[in-house]
Image 1 (cartoon, rainbow, N blue to C red):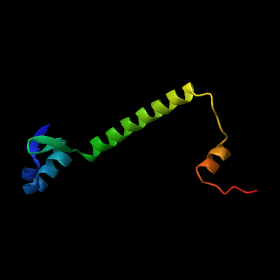
Image 2 (cartoon, rainbow, N blue to C red; image 1 turned 90 degrees about the horizontal axis):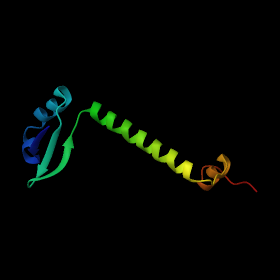
Image 3 (cartoon, one colour; image 1 turned 45 degrees about the horizontal axis):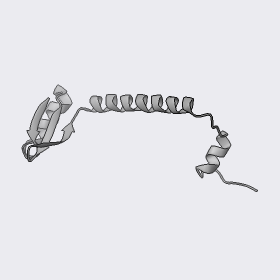
Image 4 (cartoon, one colour; image 1 turned 180 degrees about the vertical axis):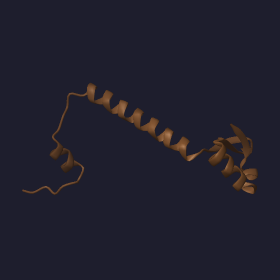
Length: 87
C-alpha cells in the first residue's frame, strides 16, 4: 500500500489511476499528515461490497432468530407505502 499526500496525487492523477487500475496498488491519501481516503481498484471495491452484503445478511439472520414478531408480506408492503390501502 502506498501512502501519498492528496496534493501529490492531484498533480499526477493519471499515474495514480494507472497504479490502482493496472497494478492493483492501493493508495492512501493524506492531508496535513492525516489519512483521509483511499484509491482502490474496481475489483477491490466489488469484493468490499460483497463482504458488506455478507455481513448484512448475517446480521439480518441473527435479528430474525432473536425476534418472534412476524407480519405478512402484504402488511409489510402497506407499512412501507409500497401498495395502496383499499377499504
